[in-house]
Image (cartoon, rainbow, N blue to C red; front, top):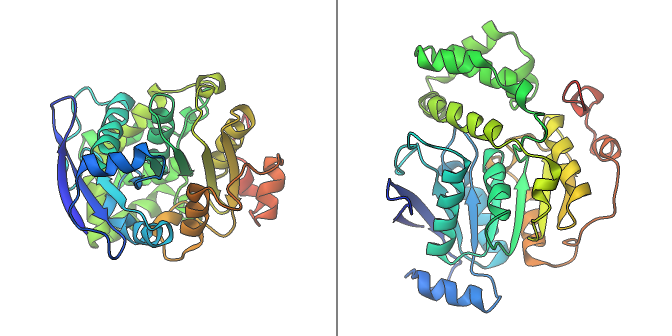
Length: 325
């Protein structure tokens, strides 16, 4: 695995990248050589955009699987505010993330994008503006017509500002419901779980990243859009949602697939919201098949959202995200 750094186009920072290359490929990376491959339409690799409260390190197993399946380099990068990348700027917004993804695509010469959760939001915003060959999102955190407003907890921001990180974590988990059944626990129990998890390396890291989560949730809400705003997307895009993920992710993906010809949607049975960072090969196989453009990559026939979730074994209570669905 190669580790390298690129400067951001706004001149305010840098991004830490990790590149995994297929066995037998030359280890030396040059943007010019990778870009030349992309210009021939052969595809020169994949950029993975991670979610909130975590770093790119958790996606490297997934990236290695993609690398083997596609026989192409896979590039993971740390978004601003974490690990070896620079801090989020004071004027941070969705535009910051789109510009950074454009920088990574240019510097790596990569042609495809795979994105998870908040990263899916970034990727879809980028696809409205950037030339991306093919794209896969998983549980993309997109706000349509204010549907995520009810997920925002003002207590989260106040708790972070006061340094009460256990309270902040509890409000984040309960508001987004991304921790599966754990999200249904009372705030007191979630706060206790935060205290216990802070003793682990991952738990401590998540607490440190809570301020970035506040900025990222604000960015999603500030970029709230209507379906027609995505009509310009021509990148073939597969939006996946986990069978055990909160229902609002599938709801949004299904709406976009119905409205945008380039977008298709599918539920992946048995997968939680954190599917891309868990063991197993199902998501990597599904993703690689679509990016390769082989069998199963075409847009599936229209189906109802309720039917998709029921077929995936999703309990009824998880098929609704609240009023307005």
